[in-house]
Length: 127
Image 1 (cartoon, helix red, strand yellow):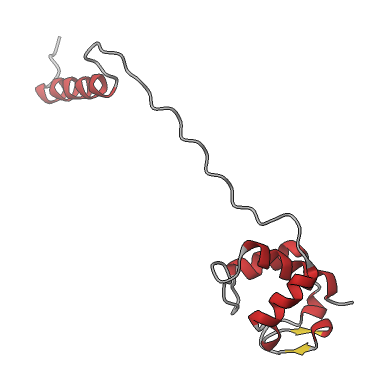
Image 2 (cartoon, rainbow, N blue to C red; image 1 turned 90 degrees about the horizontal axis):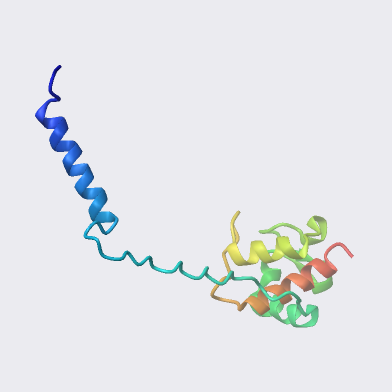
């Protein structure tokens, strides 16, 4: 019967020692760390105030880029919101994250302001 090469024996011993060390192989009790509490998800407030959202619209200069008849805005850089008729969730996402040429307003506007302007835009676009 052939003996296993010395390198295999050494590898097996090293692997066993590593496993024992990781498992607390010294005979002491292994105490597991309690799982970390999941991070509180960041959700925008559930309701927006369209009247406050109109103020956010004006203050943020949204009409410089977007068309929205209710606001008397005829910007042409961004999409025509009357034609687009975006949902509240779509406006929240776009205002928060930006993209497609629009800057992100996360950190510039509060979550409540973002939901307010989303309530305003989604409530009047195309009406």
